[in-house]
Each structure stands twice: as C-alpha cells, then as structure tokens.
Image (tube, rainbow, N blue to C red; front, side):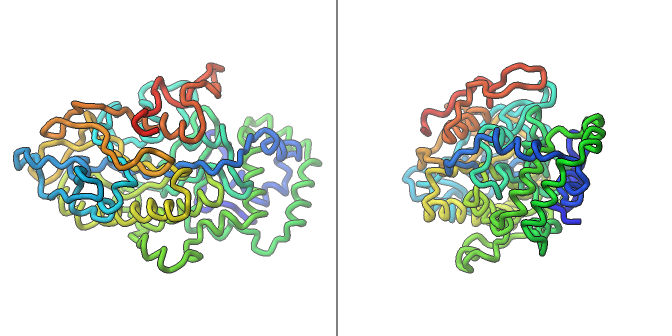
Length: 446
C-alpha cells in the first residue's frame, strides 16, 4: 500500500491522514470520480507567486535579549549581552546575531508585540492573530488554512499549505496551525522523514494510478455507507491533492534539500534535527526547505524552531544553541529570497507567543511575559530597514506603537492580495468571518 504520509495524524472527521491518503484506500472505492474533480473546479487557484513563510519560535524567545537590549537598565534587567551595530544606522541588535545585523536593511524588528491572551504556551495567537479563549464552532482557522481556502496552490503537485512541524512533547509546540471551521481539506500537509519516500509513485505507472481513479466511480454502495458514517468531509480536496502529489515530482524534489547546491546548503547550515526537549528541532535545513516549497508552489509554509522557554540559563542557552542557529538559518533564507528575485513576493515572519520578563530570575532565566514581546519581518515587498515600536526603559511595556498579532497577519494577507477585513468565508454557524478580527494592515510597512 502506497501512502503519502508517515506517522498517522487524526483528523476532525475521525479519520487519519493515512486512511485518507493511500492508494489502497482509493482502490477500495471510498470516493467517486465527481468528488475527485470537485476541488479542481472550485479551487480558485491563481498564478501569483505570493506566499508566506512563518517561523514559530516555540516557547517565546527573549525579546529584550534580541532586538530590544536595554543597556541603561539595572543589571538584573539588562542581562549579559551587548548590542552591535547593523547595516542600518541607529538600529542595534544582539551580538550573537551578527548575520542578521549585516542584512538589517532587509528586515523589520518589531519591539512592541501585544495581544497574547495570557502567559500560557500556545502557538494559536501566532497562527491566527486571535485568542483561543473565545472561538466560534469549529475554531478559528490558521493563516495557512485561510490562504489554502482562498488562494489554493500555484501547482497541482504542491499543497497550498505545508507545515514542517514535528510531533512534540508539548502539542502546541508541534502545531503547524489548525484548519478550524474551514475543515480538514485545508489542513497543513505535514511530510516527515519516514513518510517522505511515499511522496512518489515508486514504480506505479501514472496510467495505472488513473485506472484506479476511474474505478472509484463504480463503488456507489460502499460510498453511501461511508457517507452515512459522516467521514467524507474533506475527502475530495485531500484526494485531489494526493493525485497531484503522486503524478508530480515537485513536492518530493522541494523536500529533498540534497538537490541544492553545496554552497547554498552550507550557507543555511544543518542544525540539529532532534527535538529540543518538549519543543521542536533547531533544524536550519527547514529554512531552506521552506524556500524550496514556496518556489514549488506552496502558498504558506510554517516551520517550528527550537524551544525558547528559558526559565533558567537564558543567556547560555541563547548564545550556545538557539541564537546562532536561528541567526544563520533566517539570514540565509532572507538573502536567498532576495538573490532569487522572491523578496517582493514571499513574506517572512518569525515570532513566539509572548515575551519574557524584564527581571532576570534567580536561575538566570526569564519567565513568561504576555504584556509585550518581539517579532522579525522580512520580504513580501514590505518597507524594510526600520524598527517598529518602543518599549519603556525596562523593556516591559509598549510605550510607542504597540502592534497586535492581528495587525501583522492583516499586513501579510494584504501583501497576498487579500482583504483582511472582508468576510470571504462562513463559519459552521453560517456567519461571515474575516481573516483577522478588526485589524488593519500596518501602514508603516506597505
């Protein structure tokens, strides 16, 4: 049996991805041919190269040790790191991010991120710009799911929404962003190491695959039984995606970074593919993979990087592990997008779910601080080379230009050509919903 995914992922319908996306299941007649074609006719696929790459920094990085160092603050707040000049006069960032400092003209540090509903670790605010505390039936959809629904893929062989997220000890750290009320057909396509070989036909001829596809139309009785079980929701788009993937090598090639030139791979570095504690890997090759995926036609790629919840040893953890690897991977991605002529089309955002406490605790760590945090933007045709927002002298409160997560996402939607305040979809109760909640694009950036 030829599957498209490795470890099974359970869908809202009760089916696993392995159950849905296997050639064996297709041959058993779980779907009829009209359903296989429905997604193609209604997909609204556009030819634009616009895309989003989102780096979720699991556990919330220390904003005041990265983009907002407070050298005039007391020692218990200031920390160990020194600021360094960047290639933009007046902008200084942490000494352990020299590569990002050299390309600051291509970046936008935001020092005043607000909107986290509380101090709990949850990636939801990063993916939706909304609080998880109040949701409609089915839940709010992530940016990837929304883009999948409204734009579709640029290429039938590449899913519109790809999540390079592992299974993690703390489940929100491994989330690529959920589909919410948009349904399972707009979930992230999540290839992993053990399932990657299943993304090609491996000896099955295309005409044989098409024979199986046509065979489905003759299994009406089985189909009715499955319909009665309520498990068909989302099947058509998944199956269409399956055929597109299996009859095209684009996705498998995009995921195969060994095809990249050695000098490019060296620029990104490798990092560590193992999960860091209950968080995600510090896998720098995921940055390269994300670039290859948007080139292949993906509209939104999310990747999860590290575990930044440094309640102890904040400074040694940052400078010896996460900081330099993040610096190398993200700077390589931004430079690569510029060199390939993609910087006006592909928006990049890197952030965590909240900030860290101004006061350093007794274990040399910083604790949860939802009052204010930081983010880094690049690409997308945005006005880069500027800092947004100012915090107080302790780095604990936004005093000038607080920026809500929803504003950033509204900006990214705008750069995709979507109106973030127009209700293009309906939730499960039939109510029209906007991509974000009453937030306008950031006029400083567009």
